[in-house]
Image (cartoon, rainbow, N blue to C red):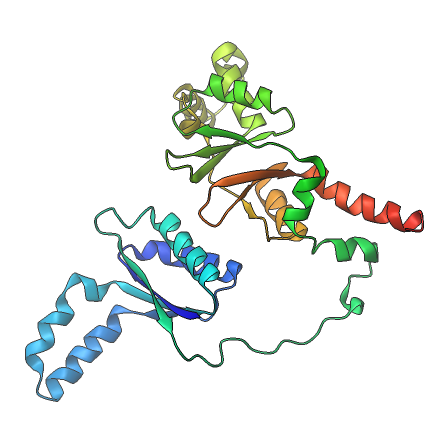
Length: 292
């Protein structure tokens, strides 16, 4: 079954993030209907004698953006809807808009043929071919190697309790911060957590670093840190069907040593770190050397 996803978006500032995220999960060809189209339609109605409908196009709803995208399976549709809900912050709030999905009985042209990539496509400068192949290993395979338990804390958890939770999971150096419904809303790395805690233990060390207004503002911000929500950074994650390449790329880009693994409703179901990524590549290479 194919679906048409329709998003009536009040806050157009969310639109770039929605399109970027949709593209990353496999939703392509998003169509955006802008407010100018509605005003042009209004003019056309007047020309054909239906000017009485003009005022419909002056409503706020018409000035919003409408996003349309077609997907070919229910799982991708549900994931795309969940992504929009996450970026908007929940459509239950006023002035957010509306999202819906409609079944499509006939669809053609959604997928285009792509050129087949051979092993010759692997980079040749200093990269071992077997390692290049391993980059496509699913995250679900990698997390089974060391079976690390994620550190999960509520957003209202005091920082000292976050530290205690991380001590209980010493291999997990990035805590997953969740809301009451269990949805991932942020990350708190060990370095950031230790800075925030030691600030209250030995503030004189941080006072010695004050040299300009920016440092003073950082000092003031740290003095207000009390809970996980106060100190967390934006959430970064991988899905179990993502690859080693995806995991490393996100860790590298965000300067993290580990990431939570989430389901498509953004509930944390696992944890993956750089050590596991290395283990996959090194085990593959060792197996070939041993003649396996």
